Structures are given as C-alpha cells and as structure tokens.
Length: 579
Image (cartoon, rainbow, N blue to C red; front, side, top):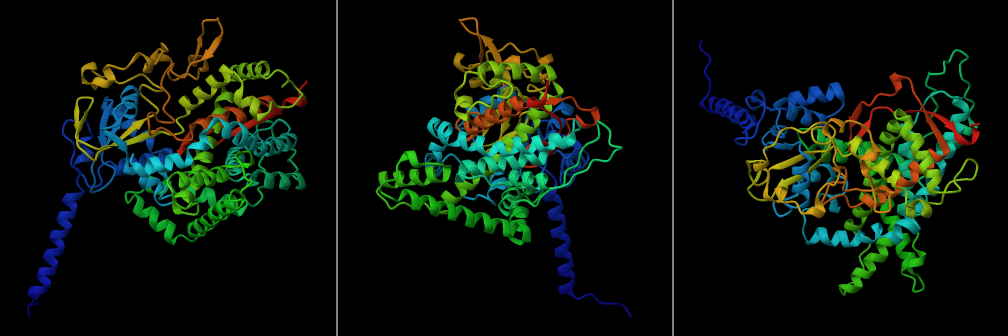
C-alpha cells in the first residue's frame, strides 16, 4: 500500500527547503565592487570565517589575519567576509590613509558599531562606542577633568606610584628566590595595572600585588638542586581579591563578540547566563555605586574643595555637580552613565597599559643596549636617582624633560601594536583609495604590518583623497624614515636636534596609531603615557632586565581585548644588589 503524504506536510517540507535555500543564498557574501577579495571566500557560506578561525587556532590572533589578507592580495585595501548576513569589512593597511580618515574625514567616517559589539555588554552607556553626538559630547565633558594636568600630576600620578610600589617589592622577593633564574611576570604586571588604575579611580589599590607579596613572603619555596640557570622558577599564586577577578573577567569577556560570528548577541548571552560573568557584573555594578555614594557624601559637604579630591570617582562626582548647576538641574551622580564612564575608565586604563608595558619589558630585554642607554638617561634626567638613593617622585617623573624616555615609550607603542586596529564606519557613500565605499561599511585600519612595521603596499597618489594629498605642513610627519628600517626597534627615530643642539622628542616624526587619531582618538592617552612613564622609570632604575634564552624570548602574541604577548619572562637583577 502506498504511503500518502498529506498536502499540509508536503507544504511544510517545501517551505523548510525553500527557507534553507534562501538562508544558504543569504549566507553567501556580496562583495563591494572593485575592492580586492579572496574569490573562494566570496563563493561559500561564512566567507572568510573558516580561514580566520584556522588562523586564530594556529596563532591565537585574529588581527594578523586581516594583515595577511592585504599582503596576500598585494593591496593596501581589501574586503573580508567575517559576519554572515552582513556587509563585508573593508581593511586598510596604509598608515597615511588611516590618519586621514581618523583626523580629517570625520564628516564621512564615525565610530563604528563594532565598538558597540565589544563594549555595549559591559559599559552600554560609555562614550567609547557612541557616535559623535550630543550625548557623546556630554559624556566627554563629564570625564574631561580626569585628563587635566592638575589631576594627572597631583592625584593620578601619586596614586599610580604608590600602588606600583607593591610590584617592585614583589619582584625584589622573587628576585632573591629565583637567584638569577627567569620568572614569569605577565600576571604580576596585569595585577599591578589593575591596582594602579583602581587606586586612581577610588583612592586605594585593589591589593592584587599585595596579596601575592604577602603569600610569597610567608611561603616556603625551595628550588630543586637540579634546576638550571635558564629554568623558569614557578611561584605559587595566592587567590586574587574578588574585585580583581570581577574586573578582569568582565574586561576579557569583550573578546567574545570579536571572535564570534554572532557578535554582541553572543556576548549578551554570556553576560546573562554564565554564572561567573553574572556574578562579576553584579559585583562591579554595586562597587561603582558604592564608590559614587562615598564620593557624593564627601563632596556634598559645604566645606569640600578641589584640594580634597583624591581619585577619579570624586572628580567625576564634583564635575557632575558643576554641570548640574550650569544646566539648572539636580545633580545625578548615581546613574548608568556615570557608572559606565567610571568602569570604562578602569577597563581601558588597566588593559591597554598592561599589554603595552609587557611588550616594553620584552623589547628592552631583547635590546640590552637600548635598556642601558635608557637607564643612563634616567639617571641624568632625575639626578639623585642613583643606586641606593631611591626613585624620583611621580610628580618629578611626570614633569621631567626626558626625551629619550618619551622616545622609548613611543617606540614601544609603535612596535607592539597593543591596539591592533582602529575601526570607523562610513556614515555616507564615499570613496577610499579609488574605491566606492557604501554607507554603513565598517573600515578596519591596521596599526601593524605594511607602512607601520613593514614596507608599504603600493598606492597611486591620484587615488588618495584630496585631504590626504593636501596635508597641512603642521600635520605632516617630520621624520625621514626608511621603509627598510620599520621593523627595527629604534627609539632614536623619535628624536630630533633642536635649535640649541640638544635632543628633543618629536611625536610628529612618524606614524604611531595605538591611540587612534583625531577627535575620536583615545580619551585616556594622557593617563596611559603618565602610567608608562612612572612604571618604566621605576622598573629600569630598580632592576636590570638581563638576557633570556631564545625559547623564553619570543614575540608570539594573543588577541584578547588588546594585542598581548603570549608569555612574558624576565631575568631580574636588583640594581641595589649589584656591584
């Protein structure tokens, strides 16, 4: 007997087949005409995603995949298909065009929704991912004083130095135990940067380094007699303070939307349903409100003055009170906007600085002659900071004319690629390097590779925008860098001889876009530079970073929220113990 299929069932099956076909066709990318791309990627579902995931599995990096595509196509502009059912990403591997987009073409390009993917789950009301609107300007005004010279020199600097002292003491203890052997320091540096930004934000350290120091000094850590001079000494770890785990856990969760085809939807799911992240978000939210309450209680008192400000939370509350008075409204300090601006200050402040500092330590270890030159420069710049006489004060470090220190920091930023790309979106139909860019297209501008740390890919001058071709003299790069030297770590490239015959730091010497550029460049770059000044000066005047065996000195990276080293080892020698 024949089996009969009912008309309704046949209709359902046909509908499902049709839906599957429609979804399949929709998952096939639609390239932007004229922009180079991999033909194989444009003819398959999920586009470049399979290749990108293989690259990620092999290298732990995603941004270098974008660089690789441009290099393989031998084009400074290409398109990749990284999100199903979405527009292609346009990748630009040309520093001059990137500078033009961020600095001079702000009517055509604005903040991308990609930043919303990264940050809207953790800080939905923070300025970092907003378009350049009145709300963004209001948030910027609210936070403006946290980057003022007075706050940085008199409040943030001393708080950073006081918290960072715990790391120096921890390394002295580890140095004694290791007795000339290498140690792993990546966790120590991250803990120190959370401690320092926490202290700048709230007036007291999160005590993550202090917990490790107390644990190490009380523990018995015998070294095997068979341990060689190049063997890594592994130290036991104390539990982190709960607030430390919450802050770093939420910060690192921002990698989820970057690596997932589902973007912010995946991040929302993780923050909503992963118990660890749910607990972290609840703890951090309560912490922000408690600290804002404490700041308000202090500054609602009639006798409070600017001199009483000891941290960013207090400064933000005072700033909100002033804005409220100017706008004839009641102060609103305990709001999601203030909460997210404060937590965004903490997130960005510790993550980028920790990654940059660890790259710097690796580079200064590899380049012993530069490390020694920097140490001599610091001794000269800070006079009494010789062996056994202590470190210069944070105010001295912040104010000092130390051009080689600034050059070393700038070169670390250039070479490390801590922020591996800057992203903008076309807010109107426009052109880029001779190609039509439809409105709504995301532009991913690399900060490593061709024209940054490798020779440029060829570009016809006529294809550049008029603003790129007609750069005002005061905005032009002043250095004469040979492209064959871009891969070298050379701080001297940032120095020029001034009219008096002295060496001066010249930030316009060449390209370094870790902090972006233009109106939407990194809000916290002044604090980041101050933190790097204090931490690098303190380390170099306290320890000699001695050479490492090759297997511990590699530069393999991993992409999390920033571009970090996969591992960081140091062979420390305390300078006060050296003969």
